[in-house]
Amino acid sequence: MNDAKKRRTSVQVTDELAERLADDAEAGYPPRNIHVRPTGRGRPRLAKGEGPSPTVNARLDDELADRLQQRADREGVHKSEIVREALRAYLA
Image 1 (spheres, rainbow, N blue to C red):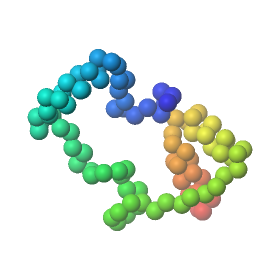
Image 2: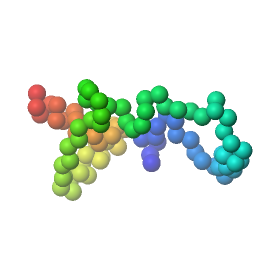
Image 3: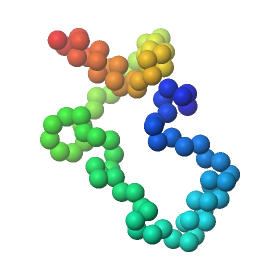
Image 4: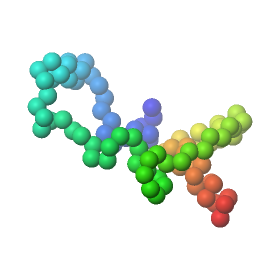
């Protein structure tokens, strides 16, 4: 994964870190050290209401898929953000 796509919470797993995590798991985790995301499971919802956001699947030819990936890499964003932006502009 290139650096532009890494999340702020990315951590490089070294042998030392893996060993420490294994030791912690064997010893058990005190409840105060367990991080629970208050937002629940999955990604944040983009649409109003409850449940997962609506999705649309589209098949792309090789050239278009390559151009989309290149643009996402260049801008450091997810391909889905570029697709949403393009669709908003097309439907405006």
